[in-house]
Image (cartoon, rainbow, N blue to C red):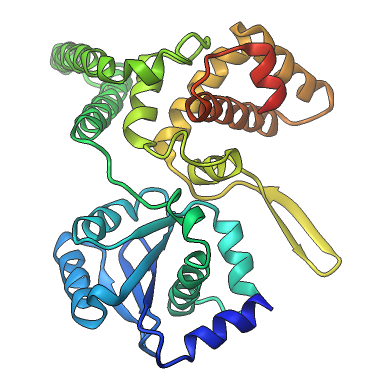
Length: 336
């Protein structure tokens, strides 16, 4: 019934609203407009992003009702920002499983062009409920969030460099040992300075982070990463936020065949800090420790158990922010 309704709207020549779907990849993205049979491919670079915005302005303009991009681990963010700044309404589809199911209801074909066309049709579907749609419209991060993200990213880069240099201590010729130690010392200073800046900027988000910063394992780096790289925190439901980050297992079934559920995609940087925070929480936060041990006692492998704990930690924090509540172990681990 829903398919018929959408197809009827799509074929109605008096319907001036235009919908756009964009399939984003690492190197290219494919744009599909509901008013055009053919898609258009652009390189995923700053110059081509500007060309894509110009393409939408020329071929859709004020009639463009909605643009839908599927979450691809952050690759979609520069394009989403550019589209927002150009005045277009944008939704980043947080649940790839949901959009895949929607696509399969129309076609089993799986190509970038077909994916983009299905996302355009999905955009039309989303506009059927404008009230619900407004809750999911993309808004870019604030200047403070962008600054904090830059600090976190740079710290991650320097920590990686320091690890490489420390590994060289056991491999390098004795004559170059002092050189490596000097580089490590310099990196220590730079990382410490960045961490001070992160701590200072974190205070800007105290009204939000004070509600869950008492969870053992959630330190300043976790807070900074969540505030800067997950601006959707508190705006999505638990399933959506878990899918967006990449800690929600997606079942795979076909007819009578079933495969193991697995997690795909998501935001790697957020998952990394969640993993570290969860490892501390499962050892030192009593209720999380009980939750983890219960999974292990049921025979769950470590990887499955730790991913479930990561998902639990994320959904607890999401619920706290969304409901403007504070961390209560018994309540949140039971209801989230």
